[in-house]
Image (tube, rainbow, N blue to C red):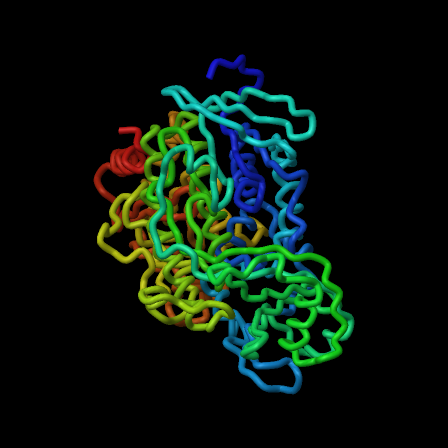
Length: 556
């Protein structure tokens, strides 16, 4: 490919949907220059992909956009459960679950919560925020080709309006270009898994009378189970805008064209149970549920993220959340390598950490579709037979047994049986409320742009001094915080009972919460995962900390 380069950038992102835009936002927060190319003219117009789980909202909180997302999501703020019923007339049916956080138990694990925000509402927030952070976003532009060499990637990008071609030179390329990823195909990376699970036609429609039929049942989704008209109903504004997912069977020769306006109207009326319901169809689009995971998450300087790396059943909204968390994992590693404070080997841990998470999560998503008897899903043998149970451990407690961690058990399950976030290396660091002056902060708010060392104010002073010497010497981004109740603490206890407390009403002890001792220390990565933990203070804390950093950041 012999083209004169007319644009140079450290990172080129291909694809500007939820995962591409999140990659842009996270890179921007790290100060990494990048360009994003998206073939469509703007953000999504379809109200889909609405479930943002608590881990995703933690990432958006740290990135400073939690409040903006909640504002964008305000129309659905009171929608919580999943209803399954043969008809919406009367009070038949059952709630598969009524509240995603019954009793408010999530508060002991996280400073935030789930948020129902449709993709067409979320993407504009991400777009504005990404641009505020310096993102260079090219809409109506499409990647035509790319070639990689030892120093970088050279890509040809076509402006779909002017037909002008640009040659972009980047250090790294991130492909967030969807389930039929041209980049993955170009790299020759295969996929593993059961493949297609079921197919739906997503019908957007207006109905003014449907809200009266629904009444005060504020569901996230309602599975309607009439044998001749099953499907899933989703509110867009709880008033007159709705989405209906109708089962589609292309494997039996059924075509998309057969879903005429009249057929869609009649199907929705039968499913709801009101023969003369007003139904104005405003759009339809096909979508396919599948369980596939790429055999590798990249090659050389090219990485896959989101649907290009994995597809999973929509039940539980795992897919987009897993993709956004891919982007977050990759962004800090790219920033560290480009910033010179990590070795290139750190990027190899992206596959080692994120691919096992996708394998475990996609299996759980299929199992949840079986549990919920998702309309149109007749699981083939061997699909969806995974372990049953809740989803909080899948969402929040997944772990990295191998990767940029020191001291993790490489044989542990990626998704544990229960909820235990106690500072184990490879797990998401525990949440505690603390105070910095008058400001109340979660420990999770500390983790974004640097490695962070937590220690005590008294016995941990040696750790803090060691971290300061390492940070002052340069070569690594490292912050250190002393936690305690006295004047020597950088962060003081909030005074309320929190996760890991001693059982009384007083504040939890930071060391107990993090699974260490008062003279120990915990090293946390920029993505909020525990990188290493010392359960006591060695003779030379600085040497121990330097060695841990070198192993994690691949600088040794």
